Structure formats: C-alpha cells, structure tokens
Length: 237
Image (cartoon, rainbow, N blue to C red; front, side, top):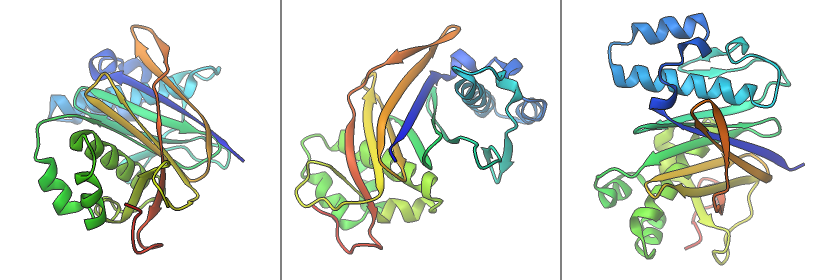
C-alpha cells in the first residue's frame, strides 16, 4: 500500500502568538520557558501541528489529545495519524501520514563548517560522495535532513543515524532497494526540507501558512533510497 504524506510549514512569527490554538498544558509549558526564542518555536510548532491535524476536518485545533512521550508530542490510538515536527531558524514544519511512520526535518542554510561536520559525523562513503557533488552545501543539507528524518521515523539515535543512514538519489547507479522512501527539496533558496517514511509514498502535499490559512506549494522533489549501513557495509557512490 502506498502512503500519502502531507507537509505543512510556517514562519515562527506567523504563529508564535497563537496561544488560543494550544491546549492548557502546552500554554503552561510555554509560559514557563525562560528563553523567548525557544518559547516562540514551541508555540509556533504546536500551533502549526494542531492546524495541520485539523486541516480539512471538523475537530478544533486545541481539541487534539496530544501527550508528551519524552520531549515529543504524540497521539494515542491505532488509527491516530503519524506525525513529525521540526524547527530551524525562523521556520517550523511538520509531516503527517495516516499510512506510514514518517520523519521530517528542515534546515536553514546558516554559516557553519560543513566539511568539518561531515568529516566528524558522516561515514567515509558519505564524505566521498559529498566531495563528488557540484554543490557541496546543497548536498550536505540534503543528507542532513534525510538522516535526521530517518532518525525520527525509525527511533534511531541521531548520532547513529548521521553515521549509518545511507542516502543516495534514486538515479544513482546500483542504489539499493529499500523499504524506506525519502525526499528532499529546497524552499526559498535557503531552507532545505526532507522526509522519510517506512513505505512507498505516492503523493506529497506541501502547504504553507499565510495570515489565516494554508496555501498550496508545488516544490520539485528529489527522491532517495535510504537504508542503514548496518544492513549493508557500503553505500553506492
């Protein structure tokens, strides 16, 4: 069975003041946060998630029974949708699916030593592949969001995922088949978005929050094969 993945994004400024969309316990948690930037991210992220869950339905955003599992919100019940949240810089986003476990990540392109980070956390196969790409920065951000998305979807610790998640574009020769589906795109030139799902994804919808509603976006996705290097000793290069 193929899955449908719905992705929603917003600026933090657009939703950080929408306390009315949050449940009482979320409002209390936000008010208790000493740092304004983290408080804005929490409020915007939870508001976006609740708006996304209610999009196209009849349940009010504040009525979704989210509970914390560790530091992450989740919904109980066999029929509850799967979702994943992310924030970076002045953006928040989430992915939702009723058919597949999913992970989602977005990364703002900020000044940092990408070569050093890749050499420290990625596998030797990954760093060799990155050095072969015409745009190292673009390729680096794509690998990063894919690895973090897979970590969220699979429950793998992030440092393990950075070293072991093997991601290659589907057009790469000899790229191995896998039950994990994945995709990346770049929005607004400086924001890379990625997702991973534990089964084939047929459709990927993207909506962005503006003012008081969502608007449809139609980005061009790069699709990837994704697997763990523990299942295979070497990535295709």
